[in-house]
Image 1: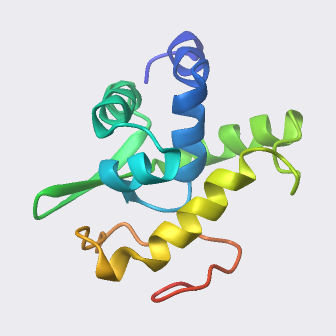
Image 2: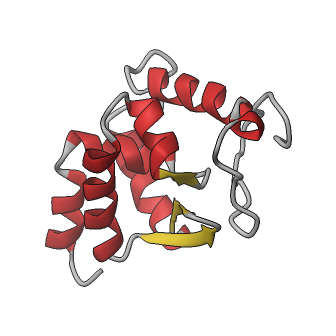
Image 3: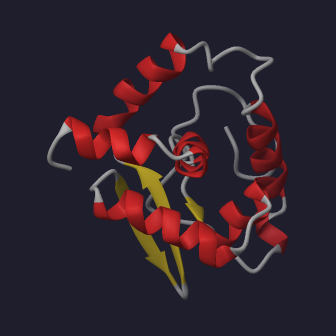
Length: 133
């Protein structure tokens, strides 16, 4: 990423903001994001590519899936924005996405997605399900 304008453009779209919130701690593939967001994979993929081209993501290719997660250096500014706008509140509407993500991750072992190997979860809070801290 080159500047604050590019960063702001990435954050200015609701779907991209939802994606960033989901992949800040956990690497997810496009099909998992599409399930969570209840959107077509092609739409989610387009948004992910905008974020990727801006340089905010790290990725891991595993078989035919690519898993994406926010690069660590962008976690603090995103967390500061969440706190500033009180999006860390337990009653915030984005919590539904997080609940869907937890459920989807519990199903990962039985789904088509094998999950990443190198991009381990950065979770600071407990998630139930297999292979979760």
